Image 1 (cartoon, helix red, strand yellow):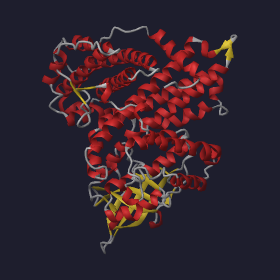
Image 2 (cartoon, rainbow, N blue to C red):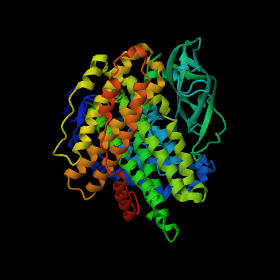
Image 3 (tube, helix red, strand yellow):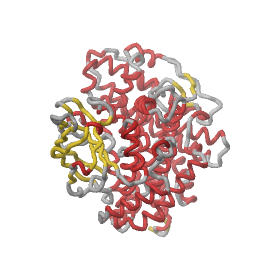
Length: 585
């Protein structure tokens, strides 16, 4: 089993068979001055316009939300991904994601703006015809229209294709009448244009562009755990008459619209989640330096340092994963024409594994960070007078929307099997297990960690191939097995991404390189424990007919990791955080 060193995968899912060379992986530090300028504009907008009035948003002042979206449009923040021909800027995913980071400092308004610019607008960008784009996109770019996306139904959540909303052609052939109900629609209380999915003829799942004035009725705003400054409602559709020219895409091909747009959301979601991780750390370290117990600041206590270090580690690795994927996708798109919607959607679909990996990992990293942030604040963390309480509530949705983490875990190994079926076979599994271990790279300060990642890739291939051979067509029903395999693959991508980013900082002589190397080593050390546990469960669960009694030994040999003094390294990371008084990278 050999690995090739490539500039970037020609398509997604190839990270298991190629090495991510540090000099060819896009990292946060590669963001250009122009991209940073857009981010600075967004950050200043949030500080000056949004944060001072957030209580009014929490009080459901949707008129104010629309006014803020209009102000955002005047700063070009709603038109980043709309093609220039329709009043947009046609920028890359990295630029859009970096702006999204800044907007995410308030997840409620971030949700309103993100729903409008992403799932509310991009279905039209990539699947609309010329007439539809000309009619709606300039008005979406200017916030004259606010967009929303209506897929979920009371009986069709993760199983979106089980939707019951119907679309019936009128006798004169000029309209479709939509009847049904949609749930959990962000911007549902005040949006003007909805992408709504319904079944034509009882089985042809189709997307429609539906204006509120066509008869869409919103339910009351949901009383939610978090994001209570964004509008989330049901939609009632009672024979809503939609002109036939408002079919989005092709009749019966709505699944392509739905699932590709979700992937497009997932590829950018990681950067937004990491914004929350950094903010949780910044609040926590500030409080830990001020709060005194037993005669000293709690930041001096080892178990508090462990929490601060853990947040910094997740912030660094999550950024590495997110921008690595964004860079690979943008690089692939730039080989063609960014205005070519078919190319963009094909590229995004090709990277669906990485999109799911980032969605799962970053949402769970955010959950961990805000939970530990509450703990750093102690009793005050449980109080609404302090910031972590709201962050804790707001973060919970990230493991549910854009496809639950359970669904995304299932997608990781199953999409790999579809993308590269020739790799994940019984023969492929045996080859991966039997290949000699690669020699550590003497050029890298993380040579041992690189060697371990190379073994993780072989382990991932072996586990997927073994499971496919052992379970056959029944593998789709072995969700626990698929989930454990997905965790091994996710750790493989995360570990390599963190290593590559640290190596790149080291090669550039960045003053933070030693801190980055500590982070990469600690993450590898901790990931090794999780990988070993997951691999053991997969092996132990194999059916009797799977044979090969030596499988467990071979798997554990690949998963083995010597380990480092992670306690000392975490202390160094925490000390850097405390000295900086904030996230230091």
